Length: 99
Ligand SMILES: [Zn+2]
Image: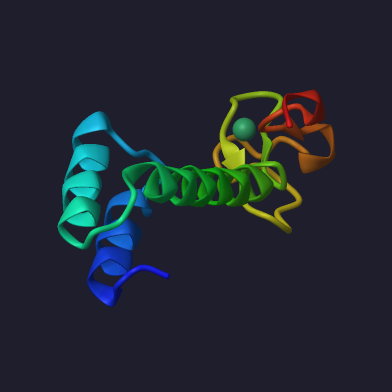
């Protein structure tokens, strides 16, 4: 629904999962130039940011931290790479209730 150029701009700016006011402004200006409704573009932007944040959370929710030193354990690690603590005692990086 948007031009390739605008889509590309949105992808580039939104990719870090954060959309600053400045970035939003840049996208709005581009949208207006193309004769689009900025509100419509905003909805699209919000959905994109939401998507990326959800993806980041789902990745983070699979990670665990060492119960001894707090190091983030790699998936599949059975002991902490920093202190050797048994990974079975590790706790989730983010609690399920935060999701
Ligand atoms: Zn550790």
